[in-house]
Amino acid sequence: MTGNPFKLNYWLTPLALVYGAGVRLRNQLFNWGALPSEEFAVPVISVGNLAAGGTGKTPHVEYLIRLLKDRYKVAVLSRGYKRETKGYVLAGRESSCQDIGDEPFQIKRKFPGILVAVDSDRRRGIRTLTALPEGERPDVILLDDAFQHRYVTPSLSIVLTDYNRFLYRDKLLPAGRLREPAAGIRRADVVIVSKCPEGLKPIDYRIAADEMGLLAHQEIYFTYITYGHPEPLFADGGQAPGKRPIQEADEVLLLAGIAAPERFVEEVKRQAARVTPMLYPDHHQYTRQDIRKINEAFGRMQPADKYILTTEKDAVRLLENPALPDEWKGALYYLPIAVEFRAENGLPFDKRVLNHIVTIQRNGILR
Image (cartoon, rainbow, N blue to C red; front, side, top):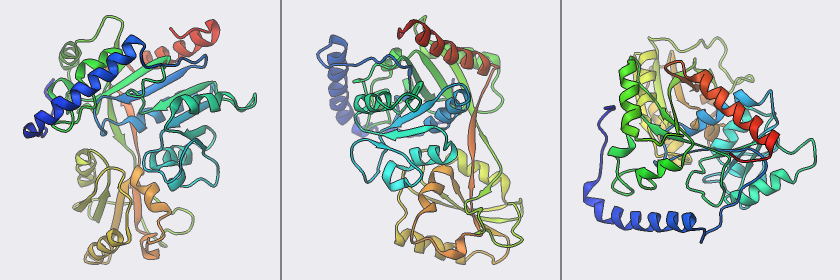
């Protein structure tokens, strides 16, 4: 398993050692039972990672939603990163990105029929969801980005690791991007190696699995990102008359405020001949100054056949931005993404999740 080279800040290693000591002590306190961890009767499936962002948690949560939503009443519980509210919030029809955060808002917008809630205290969030009236309470709860939230013991723990940033070659924050030592992955039930490149051979999968050094009971799967066709963000009349889909000859201004934009930029460059990237930090909230600079760059592009293309996550932040110029609405598109499984292991993964839920509901046990 090679992946692409990635940057490590070796000069920050002393700080990483201090950070790692604190994380190890915290985990040991949970292992000893000095810090409490709560189990729940309802199936609770955690999707998390060891690295700080960029492994594709949200599209994997969406994969699980598609798998489960026609069989069960599904709830997604997130902390709602960078939201402007506090405490527990259950998303409704009037909820905004500011109320619940960009990723929960994206999920609720794509899957309006499921429950989406946010709470930094996941135990309180689960208790509140399971206390809903019969017929409203969820059958299954998906925890988004909760691997380090050890106050909850999930019934099934899924951890993602980026193929291009192999965790055993990464370093702890701030020297690298690991939130905790790589050995922490042994707490997971299922490991998904995400963002796998094209052209991997069976031997590549075996090498990757061997390098992970997983325990006998742990299962490993491999996924990759698929990109759909660009879609207009304002499809309700905002699209300019006669505007056609993006083609290779078009000029594209690319906006991305995500943790690892490189693959996204590469994909857009396959679809358009002229691409001007404007990259921002993960979860970036676009200010009036940002909008002004973007508008200036857009104005310098050729007047015909030009587009602004962004990610799904950025799209929901731009959707309600009051500074967004009206003239953008016909040119602003986003590129939807999804995950698919490699090596024909999608069906075994689906069966693993579905059998897990059935076992808990039938037996009332967590394992």
